[in-house]
Structure formats: structure tokens, C-alpha cells
Amino acid sequence: MSLHDDAVLVLKGYEGQDGLRQVYLDHLAARPDGLWKSCGDGHITASALVVDPPRGRVLLTLHKKMRMWLQMGGHCEPADATLAAAALREGTEESGIPQLALLPGGPVRLDRHRTPCAWHLDIQYAAVAPPGAVEAISDESLDLRWFGYDEVGQVADESVLQLLEATRARL
Image 1 (tube, rainbow, N blue to C red):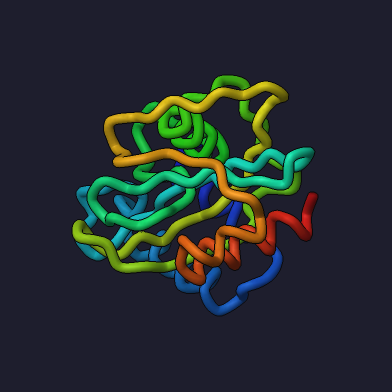
Image 2: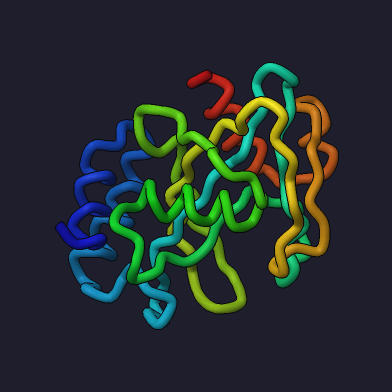
């Protein structure tokens, strides 16, 4: 199965955000290249909010280009077999934490936002950090920091807060 086919199946199985979900499905139906950065009309991206439930905290990255505190995430790559694999790869690369585990049940949220390269149609997962996880900053970040759940609203925008709320509801 292609990554494009996986994305369509994931979106068809996603419950909630029906209007936005249909925008994503329409995009993929119209654009066979709709997963790739080269698609100037926008593209599907995958992200993962890294959480540490026992300690009530979330790991955010101060994104180098966006200069905002965000979850880990980015562009799909040809080697990604599934959207979940893309989200897990991004989470691992940007957090430096091996052995992250995606929460079961598929994506937690969808979020469409404008970036310098194009519209990102982000499919957002949540990943649980293993006990004793130690983060390591990547070259895509200016900073990487754990925040208590109640601190996220002081540093991140509404989309990250909504992702955190949806993640906590699933934990």
C-alpha cells in the first residue's frame, strides 16, 4: 500500500473534525502528490506531541523557522510506509528520544496552518516517552524543553493547546 493510500484510509477512519477531514480527503483526491513538500498547493504533514503522563508534562520544540513552541513534526518522506510511521520518525528525530510509542487509536487531531513553504495539512498523533527519557536537541530546533501540562498555554498557541487537550482525553 502506498503512503497516499494509507493517508486516505487513516482519514476515512478518523472520527471528528468532519469538515477539515473532508478538506484533507479532497486534497488527496485532487493531488496525487499531495503528501510531498513539492506540492505547492499544500501538503499532508505528520506530527507527534511527545508526552510523559506520569510526570504530567509535554516536550515542545522551539522551531527554528517558525520561532514558536510546537510539537515535533514535519514533512512526509518517501521511506515512510504510513502516516503513523512518519509521525513517529519526526517525533524521534526532533526529540532525540528513542522508543517513543504512539498512543493507540490513530491520529488525535487535524490542524491546517500556513507555513513559509505552503499550507500544512497536519495529521497529529501523540507519542508517550519511555520512563527515564532524555531529550536531545536537533538541528531543526532552537530549544527543546519539557513543560507541565498547565504551563503549555503560557508558551504555545491554541493549536498546541487543542492537541494537548485531545491527547489528555485519550490517555
